[in-house]
Structure formats: C-alpha cells, structure tokens
Image (cartoon, rainbow, N blue to C red; front, side):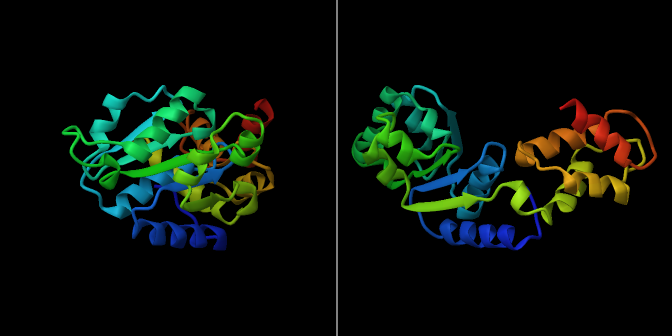
Length: 224
C-alpha cells in the first residue's frame, strides 16, 4: 500500500473509502506510474469482498476467465484503453449479460469491475478505438490519481516507505540526508511513484551504511 500526507492524497483516500461502500463499476484514471494499480487493490481490500481480485493486462478476455471472479470477487482491467476491440466487446458482453458458471444468474451481480486507464478514453472514443457503451458501463465511479509532481509533500513519506521495503536484513537501516531529500524534491518525476520506487531501490544497491547523499541521487537521475 502506498502512503502520503498531502491534501490530494487525503482526498484520494476519502474517495476510495467512499467508493468501497458501493459495488459500482469504478474507473481509476492517472498518468503511468502514478499508483493506479495500488489504488485498485486498496479499493478491493476495503470493499472486504470474499472473492479474489483477478487482474488482466490488455489480454483477450475469454469467458472462462470471468468465472474466477463471479462469486463476490473483483475483476481489475489494467490500462483498459489498450484493450483491442474484440476484448472490449467481450468485456462489455460480460458486464451486460455475464453469467455465473451455472448460467442461472448474472455473474456481474457478484463481481465488481475496476478498470484503470492512463489514456483519455473520450479521445479514444472519438478516434473510433474505444466503445462508448463500455466507458459508460465501467465508469459509474471515477477516481483520479494526481501525478507525483503535484503532491511533493508525499515524496519524503514515500521515500521512507521504500527504504523500509528494500531494507536488507542484517544491514543497518539507511537514511536519506536532507540534501538528498532536497534533490529528490527538485526533480519533476515524469515516471511518478513507479520511478521514485526504482530510484530508491537503486540507491540502496550499494551495501553501504552511511546516509544517502545528494550526489548519490544526482548520479542516478543523471543516468536516467
């Protein structure tokens, strides 16, 4: 689970908590790497559904795959804007006419649909690359995830989170010097949270015990 302290993050979490009280199809929008998948998984967990969360990444969705989420599960479709037309039609058919394995009742009555997108789906509709009916079906609730550059207050918190995540047992905990934090704050983070996670992991690759310095950050960011 990601974390944050910014107003944008708190508002996001409030929206997720409100959405978790419903079974409405939910579309999570945001730039690549902004944490949409983590938000989707948090929404599933807060919904306290008994069934699994089954994730598809731009796959040709086949009807047998839907059976695994039909009983109180969650179907997560990552980057739905990348789904080919045939897969879009299969998904729309499942949402409109889906059946449980027994074919006696609608599977979608027991399945929550969550989709994520880094694309402007309205633009894809205008370009003839996305079904407008599908957008209406998946977006009863819309959640927008702000890019990291718009919530810099969250960067130090996320850095500490990733430091703990990548800490190597047997080694003393690493800390980040204030100058290194300033260097991280000065960066625009085009890759968002995913890029920050990658940078922190690379900062910890050398088995050192001293603090991470601004020069260490610059060496990684300059290399890209």
